[in-house]
Length: 250
Image (tube, rainbow, N blue to C red):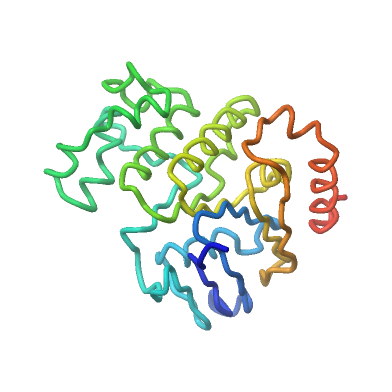
């Protein structure tokens, strides 16, 4: 069994008199793909920001590879709901931006971004600007910007939520291919039960606010996963039904 990459230990987060998270506890193994499901307002995004070291918590704590999280870490990358690209930089410059912030201009300038551009299907668009790309392409740039920093842990907060179903499926497959190639630990926040089943090794289900982990579901489907074949399997449907029931929508 792979070692623990992320240990979430009794995390409680309050905003004034509002308790957003209460005694959240879970372990995520190295190179595991874990999705977090839960109703709107249950604290999923807050938990992800605590994992990223962007906000603190009142009780408990997070350990990543044995070190207590007290702020942003170089081995943790975050992809947010919006692409957050700088509109005055072209795609090549936006891809290098994360490296520049973390390691300096020289490292960003000298980095070979060609393989990442190929992986993301952005060949020929390096000199374009964000407004010249589709929403799906901008999200690919944002993912590439984070992956070029080569984090061991990738945290993703609903990165495809605003996209149409076809683009979302394509990016899901690209994400799976990158994860399988680079063997990173991935934590994905999503509202889509089918997406969570398709992508994940495990799905953590959260309660209504204050958010708690109420179920840890192992997704025992063979890899690599093809969207059409996987979704047609009886086991896929059973997982969707189980998670829907846990989410109160079944």
